Amino acid sequence: MVCSNMKYPQALLELIESFSKLPSVGKKTAERYALYVFMHMDETDIIDFTNSLIAVKKDIHTCPECGNICEEGLCSICNDKNRNHRIILVVENVKDLFIIEKMNEFKGIYHVLNGAINLSKGISVDNLNIKTLIDKAKNNQIDELILGTNATLEGETTARYIRELLRDYDIKITRLAHGLPVGGDLSYVDEMTLLKAIDGRRDY
Image (cartoon, rainbow, N blue to C red; front, side, top):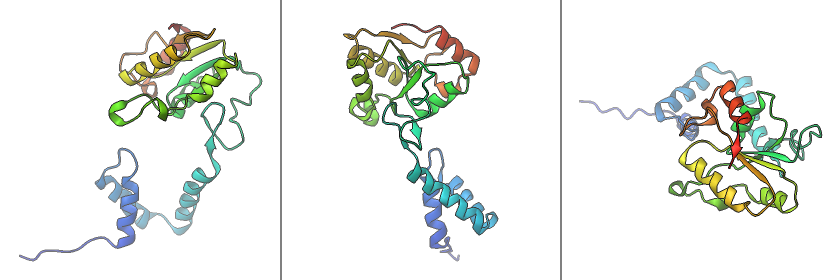
């Protein structure tokens, strides 16, 4: 019996390894992506793809006010004087922010935590973007804080922590309500359900 020692060229192996670092991309999927790049993308496409990856890291940063992503000093939402800057909707990540913004109904601003408390994964309060939120509370810049973390154990734990943290400030604290299933993720909720959740928020 002849044993084959065939393996991909080193450059292709490194590309497979790079694709494997993406979430939900296993070895076989990474292999398929790498082969597609080699077989079907011309040099111009590959250069454009590479430049796009570099630009994402080079040109985009986190808004120092809210944690959203932007290319300017502050994000477009924080720069919008027509929004109510005294009503803040707290979300776990930028994706949740964009989902809500697509409805074009919420006229306040946001605060992105960049995660939720999950001690089993090593995510503690210190890993979350909370400091600027506390500063706004101390400076009396918040009338209402809407807790829009996901309806999961981690999201609820995070919401409760923030509520306790800001309990002594004169702030109305509410939580997204009607229609959001327990264990649900904002990414999978339809627009009408999400809109009802915002309109039906309750004191928390």
